[in-house]
Amino acid sequence: LHVKSAGILAQNYANAQESFLKLQKEIRRLDDKAAHLRHERKQNEANFIHAQVEVSNLMDRLRKTKAKAKAVLLERVQRKHFLDDKIKGLRERIEERKAALEGCRLQTQELQRQLDGQLVKAIAWEM
Image 1 (cartoon, rainbow, N blue to C red):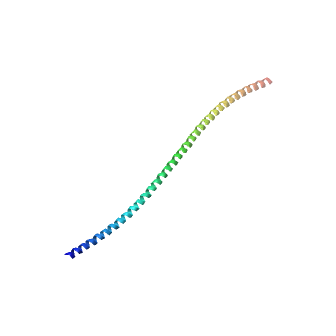
Image 2 (tube, rainbow, N blue to C red):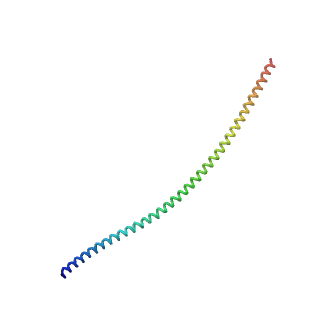
Image 3 (cartoon, helix red, strand yellow):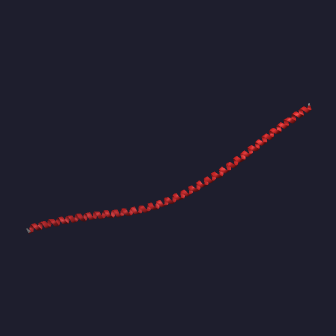
């Protein structure tokens, strides 16, 4: 009975030792996996910080670009208004010149009529 019990105990001990070795191996595998995940987390944190800096830089560039675009747009709108005013002034001057030209044309017609009348009188007087 004692030999049988000793054999069972030896088998139980061997099984326990095998289980212990398997658990030790599993613990090492899990420790390695945890170390790998910690390393990956650190890389992700570094990448996240890098991405935050990049986003911040892009936002700054966007703000500067928007400010430049606003300035250019404002300048172009002001230039358009300036040119519109200049065109309006030129149109007014053209209308004034047309009116003056029409006055000159009418005056020329009147002078031509008077000249024709005097010419007719001069011809009649010569005869």
